[in-house]
Image (cartoon, rainbow, N blue to C red; front, side, top):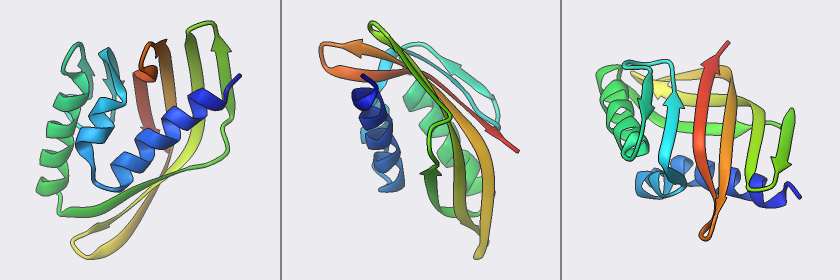
Amino acid sequence: NTSGVTAAINHAVAEFNQGNMKGWVASCSSSAAIIDEFPPHTWQGRNACADWVSAFEANVKQNGITGGMVTLGTAWHVTVTGEHAYAVYPATYTYQQHGKSMKESGTFAFVLQKTSAGWLIAAWSWAAH
């Protein structure tokens, strides 16, 4: 059943879109791994999601970016095997850069792990294209 996995991903993205970075971080497992397009490009371990938020916030500030919103398309792939899941989505990141509307298309890949607290993101990556 993939509904719990997609609900966990949608919840995490909604937290990000609402600017609730604590909620975004709470959607991650304690051993998360992240790959993203801005330096240092990879984060892993106990504080990976919080460290990513710090780097993300510094990056958007440095580049004059505000109002970032992620929109996921229909999943290309969702597989659940026991307590592990893998999902890949086309996505769009829209934002304002120095007051100008910008749009970036990309691919979001997620790995989730089922815990006593529900599905948590164990890894994710973003690739713009």
